[in-house]
Image (cartoon, helix red, strand yellow):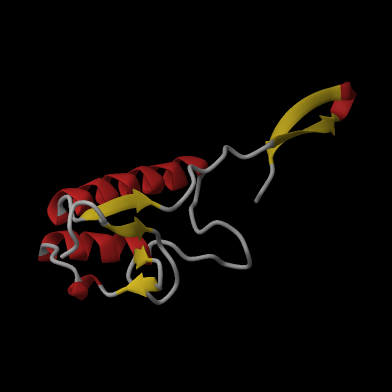
Length: 118
C-alpha cells in the first residue's frame, strides 16, 4: 500500500470488457484491490450497464443516464472509503447533458418541440 504522501490514483469509469476501476496504466482487476466482495460486485454490475450501440447512449432516457452517473459517483466514494488514505479515488465520467430540443413546424404555423436523439 502506498504512503499517505503519494496516494495511488484510481478512477471509477465504465468501459468495455474490463472492470470499472482504472489507474495510470489502464483498467485494473478489482480482485487486485482490497475491496469487499459486495462493493466489487456492485461495481461490476454498474460497469456492465454501460454499452453503446452505434454511438448512441445505452440509456432509455436522460434521467436514467443521470441516475447511472450518480450511482457511479457514490460507488467511487465507497471505493475511497474502503481503500483509505493510501488511495486517491475519483469518478471519471461526465454528468450527461440534457438532450437538445429543436423546433418543428406543425400545422397552422404552430411550433412544437421534439427531443433530438443523440
